[in-house]
Length: 608
Image (cartoon, rainbow, N blue to C red; front, side, top):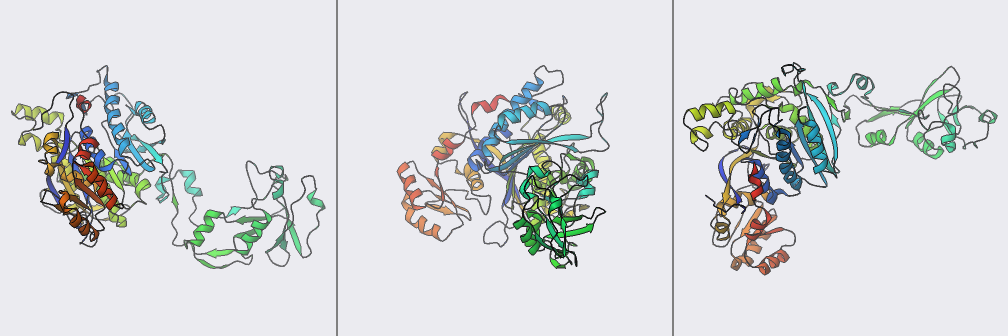
Protein backbone atom coordinates (compact mmCIF):
# COMPACT_ATOMS: atom_id res chain seq x y z
CA UNK A 1 0.00 0.00 0.00
CA UNK A 2 1.29 3.45 -0.93
CA UNK A 3 1.13 5.83 2.02
CA UNK A 4 1.38 9.60 1.69
CA UNK A 5 0.63 12.75 3.61
CA UNK A 6 -2.42 14.85 2.63
CA UNK A 7 -1.61 16.86 -0.48
CA UNK A 8 1.25 14.61 -1.58
CA UNK A 9 0.95 12.87 -4.95
CA UNK A 10 0.41 9.15 -5.45
CA UNK A 11 1.74 7.45 -8.56
CA UNK A 12 -0.16 4.96 -10.73
CA UNK A 13 0.70 1.47 -11.83
CA UNK A 14 -1.20 -1.39 -13.46
CA UNK A 15 -1.71 -4.99 -12.36
CA UNK A 16 -2.86 -7.44 -15.01
CA UNK A 17 -5.93 -9.49 -14.09
CA UNK A 18 -6.43 -11.41 -17.32
CA UNK A 19 -6.36 -11.34 -21.09
CA UNK A 20 -7.89 -12.90 -24.17
CA UNK A 21 -5.92 -13.45 -27.38
CA UNK A 22 -7.34 -14.37 -30.76
CA UNK A 23 -5.64 -11.83 -33.02
CA UNK A 24 -1.99 -12.74 -32.67
CA UNK A 25 0.16 -10.58 -30.48
CA UNK A 26 3.58 -10.15 -32.01
CA UNK A 27 5.19 -8.77 -35.12
CA UNK A 28 6.44 -12.25 -35.90
CA UNK A 29 2.82 -13.35 -36.27
CA UNK A 30 1.55 -12.14 -39.68
CA UNK A 31 -1.55 -10.05 -39.15
CA UNK A 32 -0.97 -9.85 -35.42
CA UNK A 33 -3.23 -7.29 -33.79
CA UNK A 34 -2.57 -4.79 -30.98
CA UNK A 35 -4.40 -5.21 -27.68
CA UNK A 36 -7.51 -3.46 -26.50
CA UNK A 37 -7.12 -2.39 -22.88
CA UNK A 38 -9.64 -2.37 -20.04
CA UNK A 39 -8.67 -0.59 -16.81
CA UNK A 40 -10.58 -1.04 -13.57
CA UNK A 41 -10.10 2.33 -11.88
CA UNK A 42 -11.58 5.60 -10.76
CA UNK A 43 -11.54 7.36 -14.10
CA UNK A 44 -9.91 10.59 -12.88
CA UNK A 45 -6.92 8.61 -11.64
CA UNK A 46 -6.80 6.55 -14.83
CA UNK A 47 -6.82 9.68 -16.99
CA UNK A 48 -3.86 11.01 -15.00
CA UNK A 49 -2.00 7.80 -15.76
CA UNK A 50 -2.93 7.78 -19.43
CA UNK A 51 -1.42 11.23 -19.92
CA UNK A 52 2.03 9.62 -19.81
CA UNK A 53 1.00 7.09 -22.46
CA UNK A 54 -1.15 9.10 -24.84
CA UNK A 55 -0.83 12.88 -24.41
CA UNK A 56 -1.87 14.43 -27.73
CA UNK A 57 -2.28 11.03 -29.42
CA UNK A 58 -5.93 10.03 -28.97
CA UNK A 59 -8.05 10.19 -32.14
CA UNK A 60 -11.47 9.86 -30.54
CA UNK A 61 -12.94 10.07 -27.05
CA UNK A 62 -16.45 8.63 -26.79
CA UNK A 63 -18.11 8.96 -23.38
CA UNK A 64 -21.54 8.26 -21.95
CA UNK A 65 -21.34 9.87 -18.49
CA UNK A 66 -24.01 9.63 -15.76
CA UNK A 67 -26.92 11.84 -16.84
CA UNK A 68 -27.60 13.23 -13.35
CA UNK A 69 -31.30 12.46 -13.55
CA UNK A 70 -31.70 12.55 -9.77
CA UNK A 71 -31.87 8.78 -9.56
CA UNK A 72 -29.06 6.82 -7.95
CA UNK A 73 -26.91 6.89 -11.06
CA UNK A 74 -23.76 8.58 -9.74
CA UNK A 75 -21.94 9.46 -6.54
CA UNK A 76 -20.12 12.56 -5.35
CA UNK A 77 -17.81 12.08 -2.36
CA UNK A 78 -19.19 8.53 -2.00
CA UNK A 79 -22.81 9.71 -1.64
CA UNK A 80 -25.56 9.43 -4.22
CA UNK A 81 -26.77 12.81 -5.48
CA UNK A 82 -30.56 13.11 -5.48
CA UNK A 83 -33.08 15.43 -7.10
CA UNK A 84 -33.45 17.57 -3.99
CA UNK A 85 -29.74 18.33 -3.61
CA UNK A 86 -29.39 22.12 -3.92
CA UNK A 87 -25.90 21.68 -5.43
CA UNK A 88 -26.82 18.78 -7.70
CA UNK A 89 -25.94 20.56 -10.97
CA UNK A 90 -22.81 22.33 -9.74
CA UNK A 91 -21.46 19.07 -8.28
CA UNK A 92 -22.01 17.30 -11.61
CA UNK A 93 -20.38 20.13 -13.58
CA UNK A 94 -17.33 20.27 -11.30
CA UNK A 95 -17.01 16.50 -11.49
CA UNK A 96 -17.25 16.54 -15.31
CA UNK A 97 -14.95 19.53 -15.75
CA UNK A 98 -12.02 17.85 -14.01
CA UNK A 99 -12.29 14.86 -16.31
CA UNK A 100 -12.82 16.85 -19.50
CA UNK A 101 -9.71 18.91 -18.81
CA UNK A 102 -7.66 15.73 -18.56
CA UNK A 103 -9.30 14.30 -21.68
CA UNK A 104 -8.35 17.43 -23.59
CA UNK A 105 -4.67 16.76 -22.85
CA UNK A 106 -5.01 13.34 -24.45
CA UNK A 107 -6.76 14.39 -27.66
CA UNK A 108 -4.75 15.08 -30.80
CA UNK A 109 -5.13 18.87 -31.25
CA UNK A 110 -4.62 18.62 -35.02
CA UNK A 111 -7.35 16.09 -35.78
CA UNK A 112 -9.55 14.41 -33.18
CA UNK A 113 -13.08 14.37 -31.82
CA UNK A 114 -14.75 14.10 -28.43
CA UNK A 115 -18.28 12.66 -28.46
CA UNK A 116 -20.39 13.00 -25.33
CA UNK A 117 -23.94 11.68 -24.99
CA UNK A 118 -26.45 13.28 -22.62
CA UNK A 119 -30.19 13.70 -22.08
CA UNK A 120 -32.30 16.78 -21.40
CA UNK A 121 -31.46 17.00 -17.69
CA UNK A 122 -27.96 18.41 -18.22
CA UNK A 123 -27.52 19.08 -21.93
CA UNK A 124 -27.65 22.88 -21.56
CA UNK A 125 -25.06 23.00 -18.79
CA UNK A 126 -22.89 20.42 -20.54
CA UNK A 127 -22.93 22.48 -23.73
CA UNK A 128 -21.67 25.55 -21.88
CA UNK A 129 -19.00 23.50 -20.12
CA UNK A 130 -17.79 22.02 -23.40
CA UNK A 131 -17.62 25.47 -25.02
CA UNK A 132 -15.62 26.73 -22.05
CA UNK A 133 -13.25 23.74 -22.03
CA UNK A 134 -12.73 23.56 -25.80
CA UNK A 135 -12.95 27.19 -27.02
CA UNK A 136 -10.81 26.41 -30.07
CA UNK A 137 -13.01 23.53 -31.26
CA UNK A 138 -16.10 23.33 -33.44
CA UNK A 139 -19.12 21.99 -31.56
CA UNK A 140 -22.31 20.48 -32.92
CA UNK A 141 -25.18 18.64 -31.28
CA UNK A 142 -27.18 15.77 -32.77
CA UNK A 143 -30.55 14.48 -31.54
CA UNK A 144 -30.85 10.70 -31.79
CA UNK A 145 -33.89 8.46 -31.27
CA UNK A 146 -32.79 5.62 -28.98
CA UNK A 147 -36.23 4.18 -28.23
CA UNK A 148 -39.22 4.75 -30.50
CA UNK A 149 -41.42 3.20 -27.83
CA UNK A 150 -40.04 5.63 -25.26
CA UNK A 151 -39.55 5.38 -21.52
CA UNK A 152 -41.94 6.89 -19.00
CA UNK A 153 -40.93 10.00 -17.07
CA UNK A 154 -43.94 10.02 -14.76
CA UNK A 155 -45.88 13.24 -15.34
CA UNK A 156 -43.69 14.25 -18.32
CA UNK A 157 -43.52 13.36 -21.99
CA UNK A 158 -42.09 9.95 -22.79
CA UNK A 159 -38.37 10.13 -23.42
CA UNK A 160 -37.43 8.75 -26.84
CA UNK A 161 -34.18 10.51 -27.67
CA UNK A 162 -30.84 11.67 -26.34
CA UNK A 163 -28.26 14.15 -27.53
CA UNK A 164 -24.72 13.75 -28.81
CA UNK A 165 -22.22 16.59 -28.57
CA UNK A 166 -19.42 16.46 -31.14
CA UNK A 167 -16.32 18.47 -30.24
CA UNK A 168 -14.15 18.59 -33.38
CA UNK A 169 -10.52 19.64 -32.97
CA UNK A 170 -8.23 20.74 -35.78
CA UNK A 171 -9.13 19.24 -39.14
CA UNK A 172 -11.61 16.73 -37.72
CA UNK A 173 -14.93 16.51 -39.55
CA UNK A 174 -17.49 13.78 -40.26
CA UNK A 175 -16.67 11.85 -43.42
CA UNK A 176 -19.22 10.98 -46.09
CA UNK A 177 -20.40 7.39 -45.74
CA UNK A 178 -22.54 4.97 -47.69
CA UNK A 179 -25.74 5.16 -45.63
CA UNK A 180 -29.26 3.78 -45.88
CA UNK A 181 -32.28 5.93 -46.73
CA UNK A 182 -33.17 6.07 -43.03
CA UNK A 183 -30.47 8.69 -42.58
CA UNK A 184 -32.26 11.06 -44.95
CA UNK A 185 -35.36 13.19 -44.49
CA UNK A 186 -38.32 12.79 -46.85
CA UNK A 187 -37.25 15.66 -49.09
CA UNK A 188 -33.63 14.49 -49.07
CA UNK A 189 -34.66 11.02 -50.22
CA UNK A 190 -36.20 12.52 -53.33
CA UNK A 191 -33.13 14.52 -54.25
CA UNK A 192 -30.28 12.19 -53.26
CA UNK A 193 -28.40 11.21 -56.38
CA UNK A 194 -27.63 7.58 -57.09
CA UNK A 195 -25.78 8.38 -60.31
CA UNK A 196 -23.63 11.07 -61.86
CA UNK A 197 -24.92 14.57 -61.10
CA UNK A 198 -25.31 16.92 -64.06
CA UNK A 199 -25.72 20.59 -63.09
CA UNK A 200 -27.55 23.24 -65.12
CA UNK A 201 -25.08 25.45 -66.96
CA UNK A 202 -27.35 28.44 -66.40
CA UNK A 203 -26.98 29.91 -62.94
CA UNK A 204 -30.09 30.12 -60.74
CA UNK A 205 -30.82 31.71 -57.39
CA UNK A 206 -28.64 34.43 -55.88
CA UNK A 207 -26.11 36.02 -58.21
CA UNK A 208 -27.78 34.64 -61.32
CA UNK A 209 -28.51 37.93 -63.12
CA UNK A 210 -26.53 39.12 -66.13
CA UNK A 211 -25.22 42.16 -64.29
CA UNK A 212 -23.82 39.97 -61.50
CA UNK A 213 -21.20 38.45 -63.82
CA UNK A 214 -21.36 40.27 -67.19
CA UNK A 215 -18.47 38.28 -68.66
CA UNK A 216 -20.54 35.10 -68.33
CA UNK A 217 -23.26 36.42 -70.66
CA UNK A 218 -22.27 35.04 -74.06
CA UNK A 219 -23.79 33.01 -76.91
CA UNK A 220 -23.48 29.25 -77.35
CA UNK A 221 -23.81 28.01 -80.93
CA UNK A 222 -25.52 24.65 -81.47
CA UNK A 223 -25.44 22.89 -84.85
CA UNK A 224 -28.70 22.81 -86.81
CA UNK A 225 -27.83 19.37 -88.18
CA UNK A 226 -27.22 17.57 -84.89
CA UNK A 227 -27.47 18.46 -81.19
CA UNK A 228 -23.83 19.41 -80.70
CA UNK A 229 -22.17 22.56 -79.41
CA UNK A 230 -19.99 24.05 -82.14
CA UNK A 231 -18.45 26.93 -80.19
CA UNK A 232 -19.05 29.74 -77.71
CA UNK A 233 -19.03 33.39 -78.77
CA UNK A 234 -17.42 36.32 -76.99
CA UNK A 235 -18.99 37.93 -73.93
CA UNK A 236 -21.47 40.68 -74.71
CA UNK A 237 -20.94 44.19 -73.43
CA UNK A 238 -23.22 44.93 -70.50
CA UNK A 239 -25.21 47.57 -72.39
CA UNK A 240 -25.46 45.55 -75.64
CA UNK A 241 -28.73 43.99 -76.82
CA UNK A 242 -28.30 40.27 -77.44
CA UNK A 243 -31.16 40.36 -80.00
CA UNK A 244 -28.85 42.23 -82.37
CA UNK A 245 -26.26 39.42 -82.46
CA UNK A 246 -26.70 37.27 -85.58
CA UNK A 247 -26.65 33.48 -85.52
CA UNK A 248 -23.60 31.61 -86.76
CA UNK A 249 -24.28 30.04 -90.17
CA UNK A 250 -25.66 26.51 -89.77
CA UNK A 251 -26.27 27.02 -86.06
CA UNK A 252 -28.85 28.38 -83.71
CA UNK A 253 -27.88 30.44 -80.67
CA UNK A 254 -28.46 29.74 -76.98
CA UNK A 255 -28.44 32.65 -74.50
CA UNK A 256 -28.72 32.40 -70.68
CA UNK A 257 -32.32 33.65 -70.52
CA UNK A 258 -34.51 32.67 -67.56
CA UNK A 259 -38.00 31.27 -68.04
CA UNK A 260 -39.49 34.64 -67.04
CA UNK A 261 -37.56 36.33 -69.87
CA UNK A 262 -34.94 37.98 -67.63
CA UNK A 263 -31.30 37.89 -68.62
CA UNK A 264 -29.13 35.49 -66.64
CA UNK A 265 -25.62 34.10 -66.95
CA UNK A 266 -23.75 30.86 -67.50
CA UNK A 267 -21.65 29.15 -64.80
CA UNK A 268 -18.57 28.55 -66.96
CA UNK A 269 -16.40 30.91 -68.97
CA UNK A 270 -16.03 30.32 -72.74
CA UNK A 271 -12.61 28.59 -72.44
CA UNK A 272 -13.81 26.40 -69.56
CA UNK A 273 -16.96 25.47 -71.49
CA UNK A 274 -15.05 24.48 -74.61
CA UNK A 275 -12.60 22.40 -72.58
CA UNK A 276 -15.50 20.63 -70.81
CA UNK A 277 -17.18 19.96 -74.17
CA UNK A 278 -14.01 18.37 -75.52
CA UNK A 279 -13.96 15.98 -72.53
CA UNK A 280 -17.65 15.05 -72.86
CA UNK A 281 -18.57 16.89 -69.67
CA UNK A 282 -21.36 19.04 -71.24
CA UNK A 283 -24.77 17.65 -72.15
CA UNK A 284 -27.64 19.13 -74.18
CA UNK A 285 -31.27 18.66 -73.26
CA UNK A 286 -34.50 19.03 -75.16
CA UNK A 287 -35.62 22.20 -76.92
CA UNK A 288 -38.26 24.04 -74.92
CA UNK A 289 -41.36 25.92 -76.10
CA UNK A 290 -39.39 29.19 -76.36
CA UNK A 291 -36.80 27.69 -78.67
CA UNK A 292 -34.22 27.45 -75.91
CA UNK A 293 -32.40 24.32 -74.86
CA UNK A 294 -31.28 23.04 -71.48
CA UNK A 295 -27.51 22.71 -71.08
CA UNK A 296 -25.87 20.86 -68.19
CA UNK A 297 -22.29 20.12 -67.18
CA UNK A 298 -20.25 18.15 -64.63
CA UNK A 299 -18.73 20.02 -61.74
CA UNK A 300 -15.22 19.30 -60.46
CA UNK A 301 -16.37 16.78 -57.85
CA UNK A 302 -18.32 14.76 -60.41
CA UNK A 303 -15.39 14.84 -62.84
CA UNK A 304 -13.17 13.44 -60.08
CA UNK A 305 -15.56 10.51 -59.71
CA UNK A 306 -14.97 9.77 -63.39
CA UNK A 307 -11.21 10.04 -62.96
CA UNK A 308 -11.28 7.70 -59.93
CA UNK A 309 -13.21 5.08 -61.89
CA UNK A 310 -16.38 5.26 -59.81
CA UNK A 311 -18.33 5.77 -63.04
CA UNK A 312 -16.73 3.82 -65.92
CA UNK A 313 -17.30 5.52 -69.32
CA UNK A 314 -19.19 3.19 -71.66
CA UNK A 315 -19.82 5.52 -74.60
CA UNK A 316 -20.89 8.97 -75.81
CA UNK A 317 -24.22 10.54 -76.76
CA UNK A 318 -24.79 12.25 -80.06
CA UNK A 319 -23.98 15.60 -78.42
CA UNK A 320 -20.57 14.26 -77.35
CA UNK A 321 -21.40 13.92 -73.64
CA UNK A 322 -20.20 10.81 -71.86
CA UNK A 323 -22.36 7.81 -70.96
CA UNK A 324 -21.34 6.03 -67.76
CA UNK A 325 -22.16 2.81 -65.93
CA UNK A 326 -23.60 3.73 -62.52
CA UNK A 327 -25.00 0.31 -61.61
CA UNK A 328 -22.37 -0.37 -58.92
CA UNK A 329 -22.29 3.14 -57.48
CA UNK A 330 -23.58 3.78 -53.97
CA UNK A 331 -23.80 7.42 -52.86
CA UNK A 332 -21.92 8.60 -49.77
CA UNK A 333 -23.06 11.55 -47.72
CA UNK A 334 -22.94 13.22 -44.33
CA UNK A 335 -26.38 13.09 -42.66
CA UNK A 336 -28.30 15.79 -40.84
CA UNK A 337 -28.61 16.36 -37.11
CA UNK A 338 -31.81 14.35 -36.55
CA UNK A 339 -31.09 10.61 -36.37
CA UNK A 340 -33.99 8.15 -36.35
CA UNK A 341 -32.30 4.87 -37.23
CA UNK A 342 -33.75 1.40 -36.59
CA UNK A 343 -30.37 -0.06 -35.62
CA UNK A 344 -29.93 2.57 -32.89
CA UNK A 345 -32.76 1.20 -30.76
CA UNK A 346 -31.20 0.64 -27.34
CA UNK A 347 -33.64 -2.09 -26.34
CA UNK A 348 -33.19 -4.47 -29.26
CA UNK A 349 -29.54 -3.73 -29.98
CA UNK A 350 -28.38 -2.77 -26.52
CA UNK A 351 -30.17 -4.69 -23.76
CA UNK A 352 -31.13 -7.73 -25.83
CA UNK A 353 -27.74 -7.98 -27.52
CA UNK A 354 -25.91 -7.67 -24.20
CA UNK A 355 -28.16 -10.34 -22.72
CA UNK A 356 -27.16 -12.70 -25.53
CA UNK A 357 -23.48 -11.99 -24.91
CA UNK A 358 -23.59 -12.48 -21.14
CA UNK A 359 -26.30 -15.12 -20.89
CA UNK A 360 -28.63 -12.89 -18.90
CA UNK A 361 -29.26 -9.32 -17.83
CA UNK A 362 -26.37 -7.73 -15.94
CA UNK A 363 -26.47 -4.04 -16.90
CA UNK A 364 -29.29 -1.47 -17.20
CA UNK A 365 -29.71 0.68 -20.31
CA UNK A 366 -26.68 -0.25 -22.44
CA UNK A 367 -26.19 1.70 -25.66
CA UNK A 368 -27.07 0.15 -29.00
CA UNK A 369 -23.87 -1.38 -30.36
CA UNK A 370 -24.69 -0.10 -33.84
CA UNK A 371 -25.40 3.45 -32.64
CA UNK A 372 -21.91 3.71 -31.16
CA UNK A 373 -20.40 1.98 -34.20
CA UNK A 374 -22.06 4.43 -36.61
CA UNK A 375 -21.04 7.43 -34.50
CA UNK A 376 -17.40 6.35 -34.45
CA UNK A 377 -17.38 5.51 -38.16
CA UNK A 378 -18.02 9.14 -39.15
CA UNK A 379 -14.65 10.11 -37.63
CA UNK A 380 -12.40 7.02 -37.56
CA UNK A 381 -13.82 5.03 -40.46
CA UNK A 382 -10.88 6.29 -42.50
CA UNK A 383 -8.35 5.79 -39.68
CA UNK A 384 -7.54 2.07 -39.49
CA UNK A 385 -4.98 2.65 -36.70
CA UNK A 386 -7.09 5.04 -34.61
CA UNK A 387 -6.81 5.19 -30.83
CA UNK A 388 -10.20 5.43 -29.09
CA UNK A 389 -10.74 6.19 -25.41
CA UNK A 390 -13.88 5.69 -23.32
CA UNK A 391 -13.45 6.59 -19.66
CA UNK A 392 -17.10 5.91 -18.80
CA UNK A 393 -16.94 2.47 -20.37
CA UNK A 394 -19.90 0.91 -18.54
CA UNK A 395 -20.80 -2.31 -20.31
CA UNK A 396 -17.98 -1.96 -22.88
CA UNK A 397 -20.04 -0.97 -25.92
CA UNK A 398 -17.36 1.37 -27.28
CA UNK A 399 -14.67 -1.32 -27.29
CA UNK A 400 -17.13 -3.73 -28.92
CA UNK A 401 -17.92 -1.14 -31.62
CA UNK A 402 -14.21 -0.58 -32.33
CA UNK A 403 -13.77 -4.32 -32.84
CA UNK A 404 -16.71 -4.30 -35.24
CA UNK A 405 -15.07 -1.54 -37.29
CA UNK A 406 -11.81 -3.50 -37.38
CA UNK A 407 -13.68 -6.55 -38.62
CA UNK A 408 -15.19 -4.56 -41.48
CA UNK A 409 -12.00 -3.14 -42.95
CA UNK A 410 -9.14 -5.12 -41.40
CA UNK A 411 -8.23 -2.17 -39.18
CA UNK A 412 -5.91 -2.22 -36.17
CA UNK A 413 -7.74 0.35 -34.07
CA UNK A 414 -7.17 0.24 -30.32
CA UNK A 415 -9.78 0.93 -27.65
CA UNK A 416 -8.87 1.98 -24.11
CA UNK A 417 -11.81 1.40 -21.75
CA UNK A 418 -11.87 2.75 -18.20
CA UNK A 419 -14.58 1.89 -15.71
CA UNK A 420 -14.80 1.43 -11.97
CA UNK A 421 -16.04 -1.68 -10.22
CA UNK A 422 -18.99 -0.15 -8.38
CA UNK A 423 -22.10 -2.18 -7.69
CA UNK A 424 -25.62 -0.83 -8.15
CA UNK A 425 -27.48 0.86 -5.31
CA UNK A 426 -29.73 -2.19 -4.82
CA UNK A 427 -26.76 -4.57 -4.83
CA UNK A 428 -24.94 -2.34 -2.36
CA UNK A 429 -27.82 -2.65 0.11
CA UNK A 430 -28.00 -6.43 -0.32
CA UNK A 431 -24.26 -6.98 -0.01
CA UNK A 432 -24.02 -4.71 3.03
CA UNK A 433 -26.88 -6.60 4.67
CA UNK A 434 -24.94 -9.81 4.01
CA UNK A 435 -21.99 -8.42 5.95
CA UNK A 436 -19.78 -7.72 2.93
CA UNK A 437 -17.78 -4.57 2.28
CA UNK A 438 -16.11 -3.00 -0.72
CA UNK A 439 -12.88 -4.87 -1.35
CA UNK A 440 -14.27 -8.24 -0.30
CA UNK A 441 -14.19 -10.85 -3.07
CA UNK A 442 -17.91 -11.48 -2.67
CA UNK A 443 -18.55 -7.75 -3.22
CA UNK A 444 -16.07 -7.11 -6.03
CA UNK A 445 -17.34 -9.93 -8.23
CA UNK A 446 -20.61 -8.02 -8.65
CA UNK A 447 -18.92 -4.77 -9.73
CA UNK A 448 -19.41 -3.30 -13.21
CA UNK A 449 -15.91 -3.96 -14.48
CA UNK A 450 -15.61 -7.57 -13.34
CA UNK A 451 -19.23 -8.58 -13.77
CA UNK A 452 -20.08 -6.76 -17.01
CA UNK A 453 -17.31 -4.96 -18.90
CA UNK A 454 -14.63 -7.64 -18.94
CA UNK A 455 -17.05 -10.56 -19.50
CA UNK A 456 -18.69 -8.65 -22.39
CA UNK A 457 -15.38 -7.95 -24.16
CA UNK A 458 -14.18 -11.50 -23.55
CA UNK A 459 -17.45 -12.89 -24.93
CA UNK A 460 -17.37 -10.62 -27.99
CA UNK A 461 -13.86 -11.80 -28.90
CA UNK A 462 -14.32 -15.50 -28.17
CA UNK A 463 -17.89 -15.80 -29.42
CA UNK A 464 -18.85 -17.62 -26.24
CA UNK A 465 -20.84 -16.55 -23.18
CA UNK A 466 -19.36 -16.58 -19.63
CA UNK A 467 -21.12 -19.94 -19.31
CA UNK A 468 -18.95 -21.15 -22.25
CA UNK A 469 -21.91 -21.48 -24.61
CA UNK A 470 -21.85 -20.20 -28.22
CA UNK A 471 -23.46 -16.78 -28.36
CA UNK A 472 -26.85 -16.93 -30.02
CA UNK A 473 -27.84 -14.64 -32.86
CA UNK A 474 -26.14 -12.70 -35.61
CA UNK A 475 -24.64 -9.26 -35.94
CA UNK A 476 -26.80 -7.20 -38.29
CA UNK A 477 -26.81 -4.21 -40.60
CA UNK A 478 -23.42 -3.03 -41.88
CA UNK A 479 -21.55 -6.28 -41.23
CA UNK A 480 -23.77 -9.31 -40.60
CA UNK A 481 -22.19 -12.53 -39.34
CA UNK A 482 -22.78 -15.01 -36.47
CA UNK A 483 -21.89 -13.60 -33.06
CA UNK A 484 -20.49 -17.01 -32.16
CA UNK A 485 -17.67 -16.39 -34.67
CA UNK A 486 -16.18 -13.76 -32.37
CA UNK A 487 -13.39 -11.41 -33.44
CA UNK A 488 -9.71 -11.86 -34.30
CA UNK A 489 -8.74 -9.40 -31.59
CA UNK A 490 -6.72 -9.25 -28.38
CA UNK A 491 -7.61 -7.65 -25.05
CA UNK A 492 -5.85 -7.29 -21.71
CA UNK A 493 -7.41 -6.33 -18.38
CA UNK A 494 -5.77 -4.29 -15.62
CA UNK A 495 -6.49 -2.93 -12.16
CA UNK A 496 -5.03 0.50 -11.42
CA UNK A 497 -2.60 0.41 -8.50
CA UNK A 498 -0.93 3.15 -6.46
CA UNK A 499 2.84 3.21 -6.17
CA UNK A 500 5.16 4.74 -3.60
CA UNK A 501 7.48 7.14 -5.49
CA UNK A 502 10.43 6.13 -3.32
CA UNK A 503 9.94 2.48 -4.24
CA UNK A 504 9.81 3.49 -7.91
CA UNK A 505 13.03 5.50 -7.65
CA UNK A 506 14.69 2.50 -5.98
CA UNK A 507 13.61 0.39 -8.98
CA UNK A 508 11.46 -1.91 -6.88
CA UNK A 509 8.18 -1.29 -8.69
CA UNK A 510 9.10 -1.94 -12.32
CA UNK A 511 6.39 -4.61 -12.67
CA UNK A 512 3.73 -2.06 -11.74
CA UNK A 513 4.72 0.54 -14.33
CA UNK A 514 5.76 -1.97 -17.03
CA UNK A 515 2.25 -2.08 -18.60
CA UNK A 516 2.25 1.72 -18.90
CA UNK A 517 5.53 1.60 -20.83
CA UNK A 518 4.06 -1.06 -23.10
CA UNK A 519 0.88 0.94 -23.67
CA UNK A 520 2.83 4.04 -24.66
CA UNK A 521 4.69 1.91 -27.20
CA UNK A 522 1.49 0.79 -28.95
CA UNK A 523 -0.12 -2.11 -27.01
CA UNK A 524 1.52 -4.70 -29.27
CA UNK A 525 3.51 -7.82 -28.56
CA UNK A 526 4.72 -8.94 -25.12
CA UNK A 527 5.17 -6.74 -22.07
CA UNK A 528 8.69 -6.42 -20.65
CA UNK A 529 7.73 -7.32 -17.10
CA UNK A 530 10.93 -7.34 -15.09
CA UNK A 531 14.37 -5.86 -15.02
CA UNK A 532 17.27 -7.97 -16.17
CA UNK A 533 20.98 -7.31 -15.83
CA UNK A 534 21.37 -5.12 -18.91
CA UNK A 535 18.53 -4.49 -21.36
CA UNK A 536 15.38 -5.97 -22.85
CA UNK A 537 13.82 -5.56 -26.29
CA UNK A 538 10.23 -6.42 -27.19
CA UNK A 539 8.37 -6.07 -30.49
CA UNK A 540 7.71 -2.32 -30.37
CA UNK A 541 9.88 -0.99 -27.54
CA UNK A 542 13.06 -1.54 -25.58
CA UNK A 543 14.43 -0.77 -22.11
CA UNK A 544 18.08 -0.07 -21.30
CA UNK A 545 18.47 -0.92 -17.60
CA UNK A 546 22.23 -0.43 -17.27
CA UNK A 547 24.32 2.11 -19.16
CA UNK A 548 27.27 -0.29 -19.30
CA UNK A 549 25.41 -2.27 -21.97
CA UNK A 550 24.64 0.72 -24.19
CA UNK A 551 26.81 -0.37 -27.13
CA UNK A 552 25.36 -3.88 -27.26
CA UNK A 553 21.91 -2.36 -26.82
CA UNK A 554 22.33 -0.02 -29.80
CA UNK A 555 23.62 -2.81 -31.99
CA UNK A 556 20.69 -5.03 -31.06
CA UNK A 557 18.22 -2.22 -31.73
CA UNK A 558 19.52 -1.92 -35.28
CA UNK A 559 18.13 -5.40 -35.85
CA UNK A 560 14.74 -4.38 -34.44
CA UNK A 561 13.54 -1.32 -36.43
CA UNK A 562 9.97 -1.81 -35.21
CA UNK A 563 11.03 -0.94 -31.64
CA UNK A 564 10.36 2.77 -32.01
CA UNK A 565 10.07 3.57 -28.28
CA UNK A 566 13.14 3.36 -26.06
CA UNK A 567 13.29 3.74 -22.28
CA UNK A 568 16.55 4.29 -20.44
CA UNK A 569 16.91 3.83 -16.68
CA UNK A 570 19.40 6.47 -15.54
CA UNK A 571 19.79 9.25 -13.02
CA UNK A 572 22.38 10.92 -15.22
CA UNK A 573 20.87 13.51 -17.60
CA UNK A 574 24.05 13.42 -19.68
CA UNK A 575 23.59 9.72 -20.41
CA UNK A 576 19.99 10.35 -21.40
CA UNK A 577 21.02 13.16 -23.76
CA UNK A 578 23.73 10.97 -25.32
CA UNK A 579 21.26 8.17 -25.98
CA UNK A 580 18.84 10.60 -27.63
CA UNK A 581 21.66 11.64 -29.94
CA UNK A 582 22.54 8.03 -30.70
CA UNK A 583 18.90 7.20 -31.53
CA UNK A 584 17.60 10.29 -33.35
CA UNK A 585 14.80 8.36 -35.07
CA UNK A 586 13.39 6.81 -31.87
CA UNK A 587 11.22 8.13 -29.04
CA UNK A 588 13.59 8.05 -26.05
CA UNK A 589 12.15 8.38 -22.53
CA UNK A 590 14.09 8.60 -19.27
CA UNK A 591 13.18 6.37 -16.33
CA UNK A 592 12.33 6.82 -13.66
CA UNK A 593 12.52 10.58 -13.56
CA UNK A 594 10.27 10.95 -16.63
CA UNK A 595 7.73 8.69 -15.00
CA UNK A 596 7.73 10.68 -11.77
CA UNK A 597 7.65 14.05 -13.53
CA UNK A 598 5.30 13.20 -16.39
CA UNK A 599 2.28 12.01 -14.50
CA UNK A 600 0.98 11.69 -11.01
CA UNK A 601 -2.30 11.39 -9.20
CA UNK A 602 -2.43 14.65 -7.30
CA UNK A 603 -4.44 15.40 -4.20
CA UNK A 604 -7.17 17.23 -6.14
CA UNK A 605 -8.18 13.92 -7.66
CA UNK A 606 -9.49 12.77 -4.31
CA UNK A 607 -12.33 15.29 -4.05
CA UNK A 608 -14.81 12.87 -5.56
